[in-house]
Image (tube, rainbow, N blue to C red; front, side, top):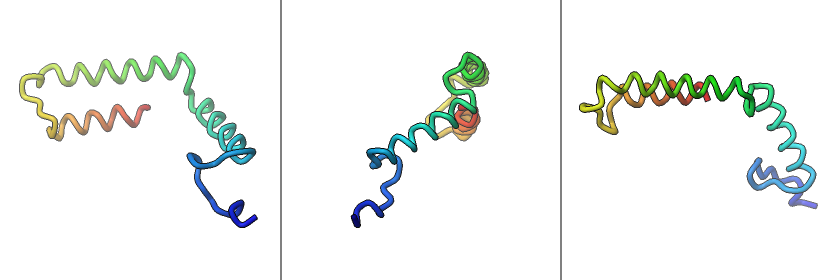
Amino acid sequence: RFEDKIVRGIVATDGSHWTEQRRFALKQLRDLGFGTKTMEARIQEAIHDFLDSLKPKEDKLKEEDPDLWEAFHGLNSVV
């Protein structure tokens, strides 16, 4: 069928292709440590450091503050 040759990405995939993509994604995430206590500890530590870095500036922070965005992106890279 013609429609079987269309690449629909991960979100719009179904059937056996979806199952294969899901297994692959879960394996990769597990290999990176997702779903483990180690990953949870890393995330909590990063959030704690992030919040500590904001405390001295809490009266001056604005949503568009570059320091806030830099800290957020640093935290996001841990996840």
